[in-house]
Length: 536
Image (cartoon, rainbow, N blue to C red; front, side):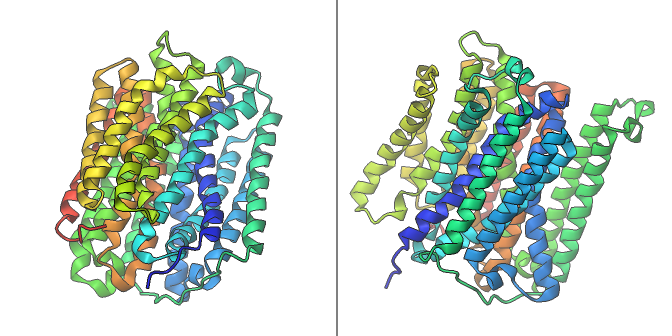
């Protein structure tokens, strides 16, 4: 007998997903503010993403080591409900910290505050995804995650619009407005967001519809995995600490004798770190399957491949969203003004919403005929929502109308491949490559649509990669899920690399780097096709 979905609890849960999207997309307004206010370059501005998404890694790895050394699963011990409440409170404290350092005009302190916000999000996400599955029948749990993800993407779409309106009174912001922006207004906006975290925590704490389900999971002592994670953490410390330090003490990376300027030295260090990370993953892929007792969940090859898949997926998604505004600004197209730039940013994050709304259709008990109709009707409605949201801001939405062509292509792909996870993922990755190449060989309106359209084909990659990565884990799913959450770290690593590429080679050329991410995801889908059940 199938378990009925606890819709009241699910509706409350999606509030948390909305906050994730709203804050993450709000960073796209906060990044140009920091770049202008603190007089920093494109790489340094991407440290906003580094602090925010790096916190996911630190939070997940912290939970892992507590489980290893204390033999206790904190999330299972607290329960999903309390874990989300604790995460919301932690995020509230992070926003308060951010506001204090904004008042003091201290960039590093602001990053620390944003890091604390991300730690709270890490706790929330660790509990929220399995809770979404637990609120109904496990067979269609993935569709509830897609539904929540659709609400998350709605937050990412309207986040830049609302934050821009609150700060500037318009979505048409430029350097002139940044010059006259009162820092007190920025503090007020973020304190307002912080109060929403606290309000949500109270709702969750006192809600009777949300079960505080506790788990008694088995803690598997994985010595090799511990060493692997320590090596990976040390690697990123060795790479990023000298780069950060070089902005205050340039001589630390002074390789002029070798013919390298400072920017090139930083870039070489970043790429070297990424290469060594991939080599570490390759080592685990080769060694782990032969010694399950030491590697635990990482002994499964699909999980190893999926960890790198999540890393590059999150990194590519965040990198495009964070660098898109800079690219459109540099184009200087006469038909696209500053207001239109924010409209295209909202379209990018809205594209993630469109794809996830399509992917959530199977969460509802419609007849198959109605589902097929909904596959094409829902994305059109989602696209209309984006048009209406921007229309209210008196933006030239007619510029967006041709984008419906890409929306229909996404719907057709879902219609054809929705029951074949690996093939569906592969087709989406290949379309992402085609769009990036199109954007690179054009320098006009078409290139903007091409880069924005990547969001459509990224939109449903998270559940697809996650599903393929954990399908063979059986009793080690909990540990495997934790390893995948750690790989949100990609959102902290890949955007700064693109930012440094932009500083050296130009913002347009920097998007070529992201082709490698889509290419790996296509390879991952191909390699897992024969090792997992194709039916979702």
